[in-house]
Amino acid sequence: MVCIYCKNEINSKNKSNEHVFPSAFGCPDDWIIDCVCRGCNNAFGGTMERYLAGDSIEGLWRLQKIGSRSQRPIRQARIKIHIPDENIYGEFKGVILYADFAQMDSLYLPPQILTWGNAGERKFTLLECMSDNDIKNVPGKFELFTHNEKEYNEAVARLEKLGKKLEEGIHRLPKTAIGIDGKLEVQTESVIDAVIFRTIAKIAFNYLAKIQGAEYILGQKFDNIRSYIRSECKSDFHPVTIEKGHILVEETDDKYFLEGHIFTIETRGNLIISKISLTNMFNFYYVVTLGEMSPIWHDIKAGHAYSLKEDKIIPLFTPTYLSITSRLRKIFGHPLRI
Image 1 (spheres, helix red, strand yellow):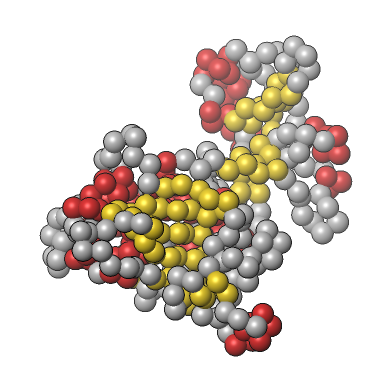
Image 2: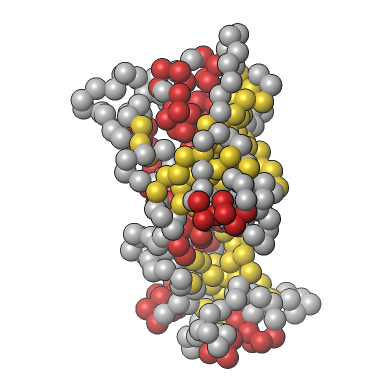
């Protein structure tokens, strides 16, 4: 047996079990493939899968619904969270926040300074992103925001070492800026970049291996997608796109039948296409072009869904119909089409 990614031999020393989709998103331990070597498994898990889990819009869903084993807040570059620029938040309006992956349903206030432009516009800058020269060039008037007193003292020590004396005390978000339910409404933006695309492509490729077997996807026609996932491809190769809407046809932005993930494989002309929806809670899904059919054309249709509520994999008996409970069939009168 050889690894479907590096094509090196898999032996007793480097054998591993690879989850079809990351276990951080709930993949059951029995939904695995054994055709990925330990080296590739560890490399993917420690890099791009980590970013999908902690620095993506799907990662925020994971934190709220599944939780995280992280013992510390994770710095986010692709997720932009900030308090709205509204007067109700006073001095905190516009402040930068992180999702705190050390605990569920919590936000973290990274050390940052507030400066003002010539027209009085407010600008927050993360202290960890500032070089010593950046700090030295900070205008005379600025304020410091931190999550706790320990970080405040550490930030003040660095500022004073560089000749910036701070007289203001530690800032804490006033309770008046938090809703009566104890929640704080924030604005969130998500950047979906090549790292996230490659991770989605890997999930689709793993799913194809689960459906068709390792021998099938070792063929040369899958070398482009293999190289793309390993980040060895040409820059003009873009196999992953985003489509607005929902894989389940009956679903709308306000009506969902499944909270979880959806995976399908189908043929489109002579191309093998995978549709992936992690969470199934957003108004878009990913389409991955995995490769071309062989000269002997045959139809490929498969689909599965992971139900968060039931914590199990649900088969789709064709890429057109979702195998759902009889209760839902009675409600809607027919199986759900995808």
